[in-house]
Image 1 (cartoon, rainbow, N blue to C red):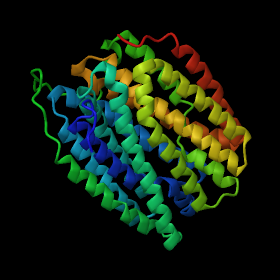
Image 2: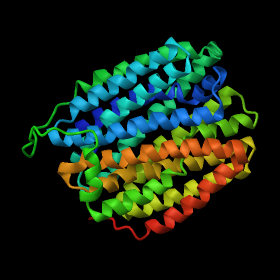
Image 3: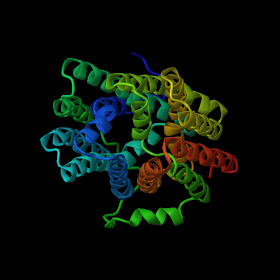
Length: 391
């Protein structure tokens, strides 16, 4: 297959690495809340687990992003990060004790933290400012294609062996190892500047919040406010599960959402390069608000299908686009640090968001949880109009 010139060999290889990793992760994600509830986790504890896992990833994203920039190395962090995520899958099958589940889940997220900044810096280095949307959109589309194939494999597996969740965790190790093999195709490019052997402390990345461009702080601050009301997708799956839909249909709807997300990511990247990253991102946030308001009001199966279609459009218009925007307003030498710092704060906010969502759900119900998220997101979209697209 012949790709456009801006979709380079490095972009394609990283996209396949992400695809196989997402196959492994997404084989488990749709059944995770069902599995956790079957071993005694409450809704609140599920929210805390997801939040702590993301907080672990976030803090490590900041540190390892800064370390990648300081050393000028990218591929080492990419490879080791994907390796940790791969080995975390069979760990989930070993024991069902809550502390072990927390450890296995955080190992997976630590792997994501190690690789994210370096990987996104590699992607950014392969693109010009006018092609960032397409490059990040292509990668995000391939990544999300794994989120289509993974649940589809899980659906087939559970159709043949119902409720055999621990065996499913073992099977997810296979695509994870395929991702590791693909990382050995990548080649480290010569550093474009001298890198000192200066030691990087764990919280050095926090200095970038003060030292980085003002536009960076404004953009990331408003994105973090949005993160505070953007809890784990586990809550969306719990909502449709509580509406009486069986496990296999829950997985089917989740596959549909990821298929829309995967197919729309590259076109959204093209649209963002043409109309501007900011316009597409704001549009995506408005769609998110519509979806969450719909989840507050809807309980019909057909309604959930429509909502997850729109949710796929929202994800395609925001996930890769926000990172492309951040790399455009950051210096090339600090790309991994900029991404890592933002995602560090983002994951801490996710911890708060998921825990808060679980608490509001228990106290006031699902409708209040989703309605609050929709209202805050509309306010965020309104403020984002004032943020500049470049430094």
